[in-house]
Image 1 (cartoon, rainbow, N blue to C red):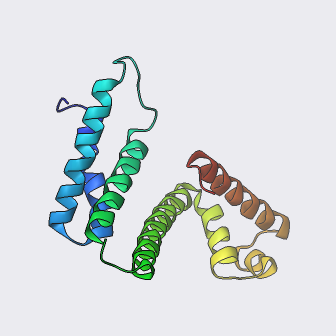
Image 2: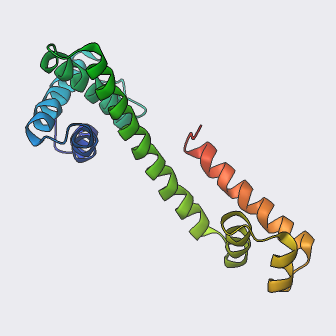
Length: 166
């Protein structure tokens, strides 16, 4: 692997991903090393013309596999319920990570909206103010308020589709 290899550039993100699941620097280093080793081995076997569409997703998948292998080896003495508890905790952490990412992206979408659309959307969807009250407060027609809300929802929907939100 070269210094400008996309896998090398993504190592800090993979480190954060693994560290969030282990809370142990030694385990994180072991899993990160195993992830990179598996990635290098796999790339040596691949045709040099083949390119991954999403190297980050690939590395996360490899890291998950290495992490589960580590847990399986370390937890042979645990009961089945303890293993399930750890797995569900890991799943919750991953879900929390994804939700935070979605909140960050939604915040970006809101900040990119024109100020009036952003204000109308926040008042209606976040503060729960009625359309009529918004129209009166901002000196707009109810139809204008509806249009601003609809356009904001279209902006958010397009962003969701672009980022493959489910």
